[in-house]
Amino acid sequence: METRQIIYLLISIGFLCFGLFLAYSGIQTEILSIQSSSWATSQGVITHSSVIVEQPSGSSCARGCPPRYSPLITYSYNVNGKVLDGTNVTFFNNYDNVFGFNYAYQIVSEYPVGSNVTVHYNPSNPSEVVLQAGFSFIGLFIPIIGIVLFLGSCFALYMIIIRNSVVKS
Image 1 (cartoon, helix red, strand yellow):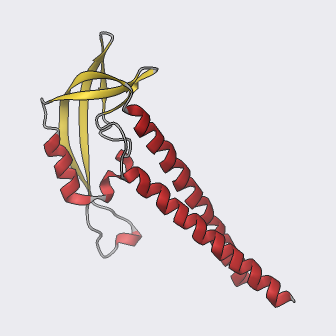
Image 2: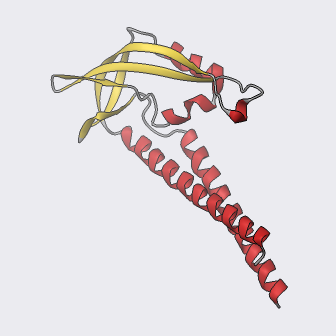
Image 3: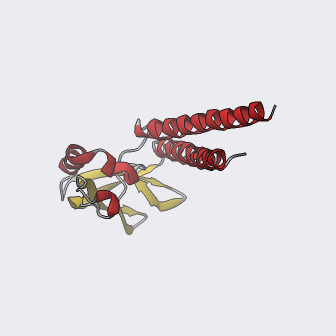
């Protein structure tokens, strides 16, 4: 096998693994999100609501990358007389900065400081909470990207192996 083919093989295996990771983590998070709709609820109050603006830096942003906007919502709620704090609006908070300025400010406007909210919490683990319980479209988007990466990588690996076996024969 040539050096170039080995590099293509390693890159394909990397994308295959990353695709599997995205698909698995997205499906697990979506399952958790769906389960949360049947969790216990408590009334809570928004204690902080703002947009975090991050300016990416580094060599890949030498020419200037656009800023990333993420909503930061903090709320307190009560479970069995104990006051707890939470920050999850959805279980896909890690992807909030993907949607940009409008999304971040829309979420902040939906949860102004002092407003009352319904908090969904896991009865087995009351610190596992979310405001927007249930099915989420972003929960489908992430595994779909993972599956596409996985299938594309499988095809690339197949082509590398076929091409290598044709060259040998």
